[in-house]
Amino acid sequence: MKRENYTLILEFVFQGFSSFHEHQLTLFVVFLALYILTLAGNVIIVTIIRVDRHLHTPMYFFLSMLSTSETIYTLVIIPKMLSNLVGLSQSISLAGCATQMFFFVTFGITNCFLLTAMGYDRYVAICNPLRYTVIMNKRVCAQLVGGACSIGLIVAMTQVSSVFKLPFCATKVPHFFCDIRPVMKLSCINTAINEILTVIISVLVLVTPMGLVFISYVLIITTILKIASAEGRKKAFATCASHLTVVIVHYGCASIAYLKPKSENTRDQDQLISVTYTVITPLLNPVVYTLRNKEVKDALFRAMGKKIS
Image (cartoon, rainbow, N blue to C red; front, side):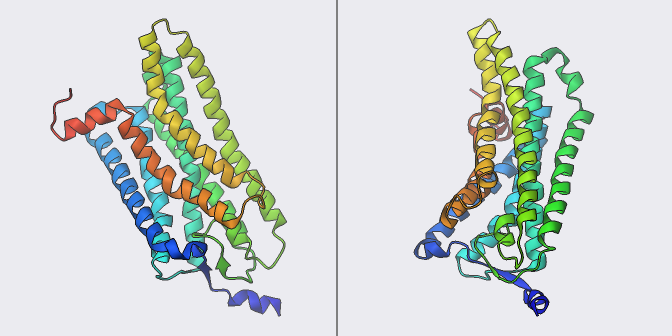
């Protein structure tokens, strides 16, 4: 009889921000504005890097890949979230849910490893500047990006296939998109094995790149402190500041979301954390790299035909 019940679940319904019912229109306006800024910022970054020859370096190649990845990442989640906030269809088919989860996991993990590749690029630039162009050649850059995407795809296929092999008895997803844990909660059976798999994967894809970035920055800071001139130290720190800011926020939010005990936060707290890494963090990338980065600002002025002061 239970097996018959399993087959009845053809779609899920997002509960979304139902506990903020009175403020849903306000949330819609705020999230829409942030989303437009995110899309515009990332499109500007990718375009300016493509057209300005001064930015045809490994650092900006990785930045353009990160902006592209984050654009797709937000496209997978935010339009559906916005439509739910204004009362349009809050349902999603099982296939649609699996597809959303697949792309969310793929590009979320790709972003993590692209940030690691950017950390390695800064390490080579500061700790081994004379061999920078030899070490960070086009082939190596392409391999690093390919590796980041491959890890994302492999992990996404593993996670999604394990989640959607489960039989589902409930339909109401206590979230605004098909994240792994909220969907697993709808299963009729014990999901302990899936929980263990999720924790293992989360540790591997978060702790590993975080560790590599940490090692890179320990070596970078050690090298910078050996620079004799104060101006030289300031310039070296400036080249890393933007990346380090994005890294701290990105890994910080992802770690809170996926490495904490599953029962530690309330549903509203979980959603607030999720909003941070699905709406706020993708906006941080274009903001930090355009407002704090002189080379990008100069390229924007050149593109607009203005004289740089």
